[in-house]
Image (cartoon, rainbow over all chains, first blue to last red; front, top):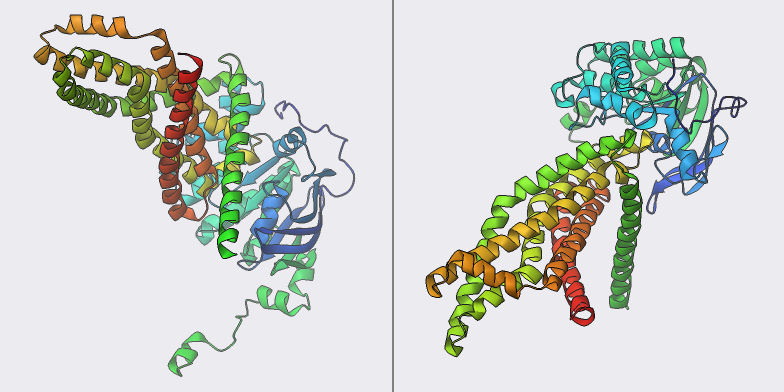
Length: 273
Length: 265
């Protein structure tokens, strides 16, 4: 049962069309433009993977989808509401229907894992403390982390911290779930486990999932559709097969892991460049 | 032309900083008023009590030592000069009024900046670097409400308390001087001190403590919120917080002293 969340957008208010619309988004830091003219529609219930190399602007795009940054131009609309024009109340209501799993997990180190997961429930619902404790245990079990409520985040491994962060993101039963580099810093087995967990959530709750990654195996495993960013521009949006077989040379290079300079580095070294 | 450009840029940066500080102050004040101890939001008060313990307990021993030493230095220096005029007993007035009006609040503020202000700034800056502040925003929680307000409320309670302790330590040290040089018992010394202190002296000291608490928390947190550049930025933010807090506390002290001088003689 989903907890009662004050200020949540009512069902039916945003049932038609894409749940997220990005139009001509221009974004950056100071004078440096990181994203330019980005357009993207994300449909309700789909898993969209945002691909791109380092510095391509995918984490910046994710920050704009979370409403954590003001665009330099263009718009990001969630449920039809332009985040740049939204009032504080609208922005808070939108954020309550979103869960975010950060690249660094971003757990509060001064709180136990249980307190971390319970925080959104304590702050945004009127549930009794015993109910919150029960829900906290359920959310942690859902991500395969039973019995760690009393531990502090620093006592967990990297993979466990990411799972705990996911449990916190799931606390308010979000409609949209955002992942920033979920498999970064994890070994292949744990990363594969996290992929299965994402697939499981998608199958069970029909949540709209947005994943930023450059891990191709993971992207192709979990995605319904993918988009590819290169130097701040959107190169393509399509299904797994469409992206795999795309004719654009940069996408072909990225998908087939072709290095920038085909001559091996060792050869350059031996021949004195 | 280049000098004008630099001066212009510097002025804009300072104006932006003061603007940021003002906006943060009003938002902090709005959330502080809403943080009543009952209902769901009462959970903030657990954090406030934690902050009070941290600020008070960590600063008290060093504060008493510094304040006591200052009171004794003032009595020794004042005594050396006042002896020439045969007015040794004026040392009691000197130590009592100066510690209550001026040095007690100032020493308490400077010790708290060193112990708690720097720690606050480092904590907030680390939260910014490790995406914890973004995580709060993503959970529809305002970091000013969740992070700053408990520190502010804790400081608002503890800095006046620490100021009282600083004043007491300074006057007590003056009492040790009086015991050995004026043949007064400590009880007589405290009675004389209580006679010469006016309500204005006590109120001005406590008002200053409240103003300094506001300056310390807001400057320390703003430096943390605005951190750039990873772990190196955390160190820079902490240093900036200490330097700016000391400067602004002294400036606020000057303004408060002038206010009481002109409006409550």
